[in-house]
Length: 279
Image (cartoon, rainbow, N blue to C red):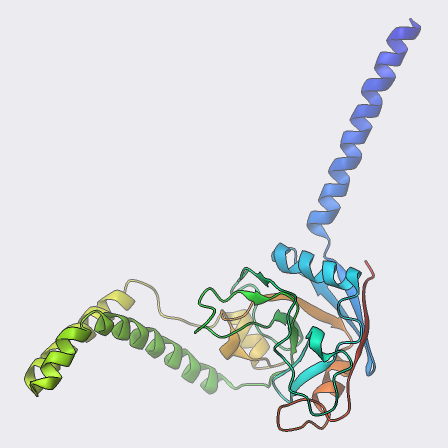
């Protein structure tokens, strides 16, 4: 009888352990991590998105390792963004150009678009340009907080048109690249008719290719945000958005208004004192 009770108790404990493990897993999946960025200008509280786990876990790792302690907001542009996280900015002398420091690795892009976009207050990863970084991989440490500006409906419509035209131009240029030998030959021979005919053919092909996908339009959520709180819509789909400010936007606004030099570095250092997980 006693041995049966021990068996039943063991089964019960295993069941409870499984239940607790399941509850812990649900908590980690459903609750977003919050961190406090303590700066010389005040505190900024951010939450990190679970939908961008590589960026979330990397930011937490760097915060817990103290990587950000003593770094500066080294690039500040009013009505655009404030950028930080360069390890080389620690104790950097005044006037030194900053922004090229890293931690020796990049983070694969995690675009969760259009769910997360560049509205005011989002936390995004900086990166190198497409010419050396075609996969748009993020810096292992540098980040920025969007301030941006408010747009009207007509401006957003104009941006939609530019984006759609840009898609057409990119496809046309890619097609033209495949015919460069032919194009050079016709140019050398001053064959204007041949060039015009090829241009018309490639343009028709580009239009057909672009027509396979729907035209770009901002979502209602984007339009609502960009016409009220503001942001930087031209960065959408280009840089990974992995969190947002939930407290301390007044501190962000204070930082974006500081006086800067010609390289957009604040004349008076704005320092990150500590980044810590608070929840």
